[in-house]
Image (cartoon, rainbow, N blue to C red):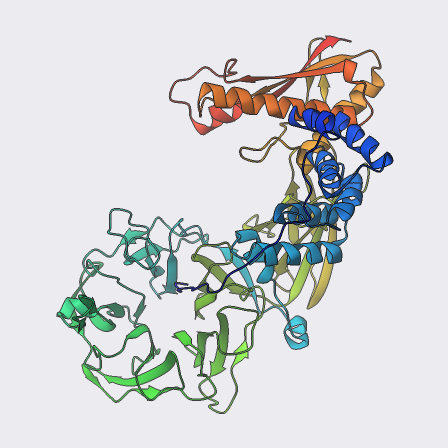
Length: 624
């Protein structure tokens, strides 16, 4: 959601206790700078043994193990390093290694330190926003299955509502040809429409050009007969605003408008509603099934504080006096994005009621006015902002918006029976729990019902309808695909295990062929998945004790020649260091970066697939 955050105060950090390079560390530092992490670790260890170690040495020793993904040793030496003052990044790396070792409690403590030292870092923000659930929210049954909608863009998207004609109207800042607004440096908002297909996907969105203006437009609500729309736009359309002569500024408000279908899919006859005011905003409309009550949010006088939910009676073009929705809904905080369901359940978002964090979605039965609003729970609500929830009972599907991934995106919600399926992905040979596996839920008709990535415990969770036979497919780099099924079941929880068999290396006369070795963008340290694949090479070299390998790292053609050459050389040396750290003699493996000099696919205007083929590691057999 769009908010203005003001960070006040000063953070003072003393690093007087942090040691640095000196004559004793010169040799070890030279090895480290050359990316020879195994030998660097040995050199730093000698300083420890000679009682010449300080915080700098412990940190460098830990980083050496970090860069070759030796988590056990990294944890040992990071623990020593943080006994003295360290940079924030050291605490972050320590947390990563602790997490990899399964010590999530200690990892959280290190992340707390990191967050305190680097409060504006995105990783710190993500940690601080981890949910602190109350016991009630923890035990609340899942009400909806959630899936990110394919209509989302890399810009702000929110306010989705599904009509009886299978049209989804929403508001978006995706039109990059539009002028950027000063609040978030994104383009001004426009109204868009997508069509919901029979398989549940949404068509490519198109702008509602006949209603969009040069200002912010949307969100909207449509009457059940599909002929009338209420939507938001700015008071500047009516040349109404407040002036600040001293600052030479004009302040507008959000107004509500009514439009009608005029021909085909076109809208026209747009009129501003009579209770608009240049003194406050009225926005985020939702019309009842009978078309006689319009809900909206406003900061108009007479509320509980901040923005409140209001309603007004509608009779054609005649409107009653707006009424506040009351204390069961509104608080001293902000309540917004009302959506009235056909059965009288009102959904809205609030940051004033107790929830997971940020804005949460709540519901209240308007037919039982004294009934308190309740939190929709996870997975609709997260520690981030979750808002603009609407549900079409006839079609049994809803949509809402959330910035849980750092951007205001649109998500689909489907009510579930309460069967929670937990798919656990394991290595078929070692039994190791596999994170980062792509798990797909397929129903008994073969329809894709969702995809998730397994977490650090190898788990992916899905909501399955009662009495539904569910199949699950799992894929992961370096492994053969795996499947498993779950029989029909009622409310409760089910656990399904999928074992994945590692893909074995192919050994030719000239090369050991592995699955792709992935590195993070612009980085050369070995990742968890890269380590898994390189372990296969270690196994091969142990089987062939005289084998000598030359590891070559290649990049695609993007970036300068010199940059690509340096990056590939660092990655090749990290690869060599990892292999050596696993007990292979350094005389048996060499490495070099080739940059973009030896493309596998020669192309000028390369497509992404060709770039991917050129971005590779090769393990050439010098001696077998």
